Amino acid sequence: MKAKYLLTMIVAMAMISIAAQSVMLADELLGTWKYTISDVPPEYESGYMTFEQKDNKMVGYMGQTDKKEMKELTVDQGKVSFATDFEGGLIKYTLTQKGDSLSGSVSTQYGDFPIVAVKEAKK
Image (cartoon, rainbow, N blue to C red):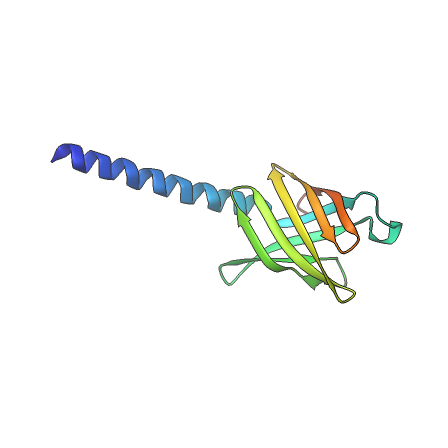
C-alpha cells in the first residue's frame, strides 16, 4: 500500500513540476521584444512584438504604435508560434525562446526568412 502511495505522490509531483515550468517559460516571454528579419525589404526588416497576460491568457501584438494582434498564439516549452495578417495573406512565425532571445523563421507567400528577437529591458 505504501508503494502505491509513494508512486502516486511521485507522479503528482512530476506533473506539478512540468506545469510550473510551462508557466515560468510563459512568464519569461511577457514584455516587449525587438526583432530583425533577414533577407527582406528594409521597411519590414525590424520592429517590435509585445506579449501580455490578459484575462489569464497570453496575447501578443506586432508593432508599437499601429499594433496588430497575433492570431493562433501558442506558447509551449520554449516554443512560440503565431500568425499575423499582411496584405491579404497570412504570415506565420515559429520561434524558440532561450532566455532573453527568440530565434526562428517567418513563413510568407514569398518564402521563409530567419528572424531573431531580443527582449527589451523593463522601463
